[in-house]
Length: 247
Image (cartoon, rainbow, N blue to C red; front, side, top):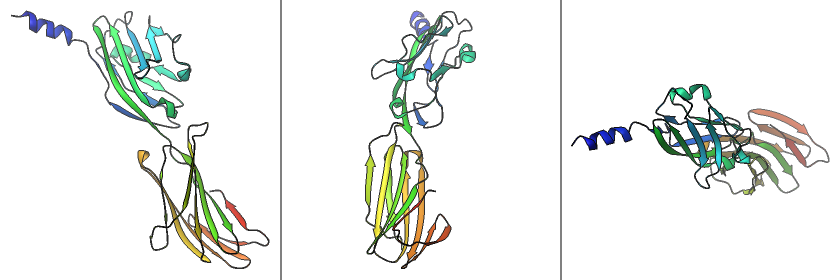
């Protein structure tokens, strides 16, 4: 009658766990995928493998007490490392640098030593804060166009508001991902009045980023008054209809 109890104790003596089932990787910051296992001071039989669940690509391998990267996916070349000095404590966490959109997905942490073998699964998502929006204004005889451009990830929510917080119509262009894996955003709001008081808002919900950029602009025949980000400038313009300000 004691055998089932003894067997259960043996099979549960080794465990591999991830402290967080989900990790948000942010552009420009290293991502640390946490993984813990039942430690054994003797590392001679320790094998740690990180791989993508979707296609079994090897992200990082460690055995014979050193990194073994011959089978590592080229997409992770020179971007991964383990905390080798903490392996004897049961820390098999993986550090990924220069994170990019294609790093998003499911990862398996697989560990084996003299005590057993186990695995744990976690998900990584990717986000990039949107850059400071670049403002440009185009003026002609009948209308004025206010334009903002920025880059980030994932696709944002864009809102234009009038001086009484009413929603304004606008044009939005979202171009495919750049070489850095970012979306290029260009949004234009057109107005007819000689005095403009509008606010451009961009929300990156994944990263809780909320950019609000008010623009106050008035123009006459030769004089333009522009207030953006709390700074006002008088612009005397003759024979020009395009004003660009890079914030």
